[in-house]
Amino acid sequence: MTQDSETMNRPVIRRVRHELKFRELTVTEVSHLTPHMIRVTVAGDDLDGFLSASPDDHVKVFFPREGGEPERRDYTPRRHDAEANSLVLDFVDHEGGPAADWARSAKVGDPLSIGGPRGSQVIEGDIAHWLLIGDETALPAIGRYIEEMGAGTKVTSLVAVPGPADEQGFDTAAELDTNWIHRPLDAATDPAPYIEALKAIELGEKTFVWIAAEAAVARALRAYMTDQRNVPLGWLKASGYWIKGEADASEKNIE
Ligand SMILES: Cc1cc2nc3c(=O)[nH]c(=O)nc-3n(C[C@H](O)[C@H](O)[C@H](O)COP(=O)(O)OP(=O)(O)OC[C@H]3O[C@@H](n4cnc5c(N)ncnc54)[C@H](O)[C@@H]3O)c2cc1C
Image 1: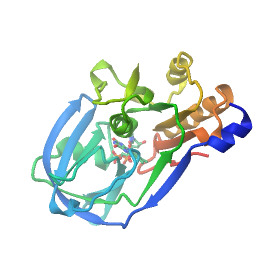
Image 2: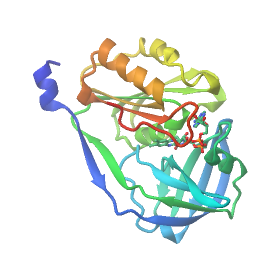
Image 3: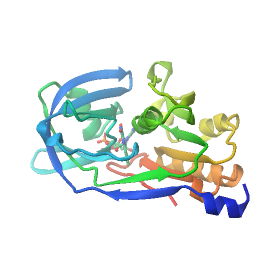
Image 4: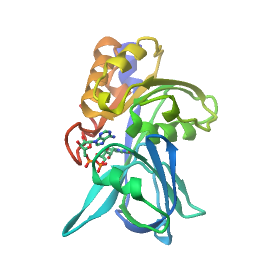
C-alpha cells in the first residue's frame, strides 16, 4: 500500500457516547471457565437498555470497601443477553487486587454494581484482515471481536496465557487462525514471546492490528508493528489494560 492510498483508505475509529447509567445487579452464575479465568454472570432489570457497541468497550465495576469509597476497575462486557437481561464478565484470576479477590469469592446472589459503558470506539473501514493480539485481560474483547465478525472475515489472534488449559474456543463464522503463547502470569510483562510468534504471522494488505496487554508489552508490540512491520498508524490500536506493580492502572489508546 502506498502512503497515499493508506491515508485515503485508512479505517475510522467512530466514537459513540452513551448515557452514563449505574446498574445494581445480582450474580446468577459463577464458574472457572479456565484455570486462570473466572466467569461471572450478573443479571437484573437494571440492564434494560444496556448497550455495548464495540467489543473493546468496558464497564466500571464497583467493589465495596470498608470505610471508604468503593474500588472501581474496568472490565469488558463479554456477552450481553438482552432477553435474559444478563451480562457475562470474565475476571483474570491473578494474585492481589480487589477485583480478582471479589471474583474468587463471588457466589450466586451476591450484589454487583456497574457503570457504563460510557462510550464505544467502533473500528470501521475496508479491513481485509484483523490481527488481534493480547494477554488474558484482552481475551474477553478478543473473544467478542472474533464471535461478532461476519462470515468469511479473515482474523488472526495471538494470545498469551499461562498454559494450554487456559486457551479458549470461539463460536464464529469468521475465517479464524488462533495462535497461543504459553508463559506464566509472572512473565506477563515480557514482549519477547509475542514478537517471536509474530515473526511467523503474515499481515497482508489492509490488516488492522488491535493490541491490548500489560502496558509495557502493548507499547513494545505497537513499536514492533510500526517500526519492524511497517503498519501505518491508522491501522493500529494499542492499549495497556493493566500496569505491572500499580493498582487500578491502565494506558488506554497508546500513542
Ligand atoms: C478497557 C479495559 C478492559 C478490561 N477488561 C478486562 C476483562 O474483561 N477481564 C480482566 O480480567 N481484566 C480486564 N481489564 C484489566 C483489569 O481492569 C486490570 O487487570 C485491573 O487492574 C484488575 O483489578 P484488580 O483489582 O484485580 O487489581 P489491581 O488492584 O488493579 O492491581 C493489584 C496488583 O495486581 C496487578 N495486576 C492487575 N491486573 C493483573 C493481571 N491481569 N495479571 C497479573 N497482575 C495483575 C497490578 O499490577 C497490581 O500490582 C481491562 C482493562 C481495561 C483498561
